[in-house]
Image (cartoon, rainbow, N blue to C red):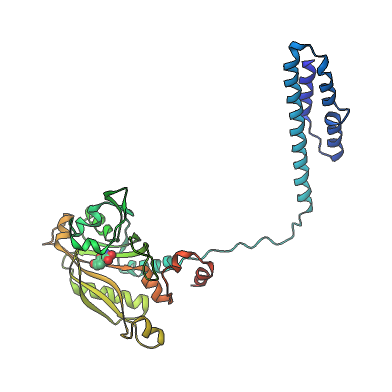
Length: 336
Ligand code: DAH
């Protein structure tokens, strides 16, 4: 009796009928009113009591196998049907090409400009320690300048933080390399600032650093002028005295945008000048922190926010637009 069920099980699993008729025959043979399964269930009464349990289990296995086989045959015939109906000459669905995000676009352009005068791109981690983000940059603990950059700390550990600026990469690079050093470090930075149309918690900066013998403020000015000419087509710049802990002297750079349109008036607040970056001569204390001899070497550094520059170049009024991923906004950069 059990051998018979075993045989039937084999038959079910090896059944491979393709045609509809064959499948229907198979269904009737096992599942029909007068089919094998009903027959086997009817015989249950005659099975000796001690074998009832095993008998029950076996016919249930068989029933399950039949159901699965029928299901498999059914879905196979369905897909066959669709393939047959498909019109292979139909054109495919159009695949939309992505666009380069304006921030990436401008970042690449800036990289290119500096690469053409010998700068190489350097990178550093976004999760930083106190030394690279603050102390080595001449901002010891309790230095008031730390307050200028509201910091995200990780897990209440004051030594693990999200970098607030890309100046960290200056330190990391100088720790591992000897002058002459000429690097550009683009990257994401993080500040715990209220989100408004002018500020955002995550943004992008590009840092530049040049260390060699006899580097002067005149070199800095020439380099920045070359940069503004290449990027904006504007060569008139001015440097206003400023303060950063890691540079001495420090300056802020304005580019003369002009007053040719209403927009120019609005974005320059009627002055014609626009601030684009901070810069200065690397403070000797910073060089000492990374074991570079300040009596032998000097250098300059600069840092700028990429969003601000993109906003200027493409007349984008609200920084939040960069992060909203609205296709209508991003698509406009398709042709650039
Ligand atoms: N790290 C400064 C900031 O985030 C920007 C900056 C200013 C970088 C002057 C520099 C520099 O390298 O020389 O506000």
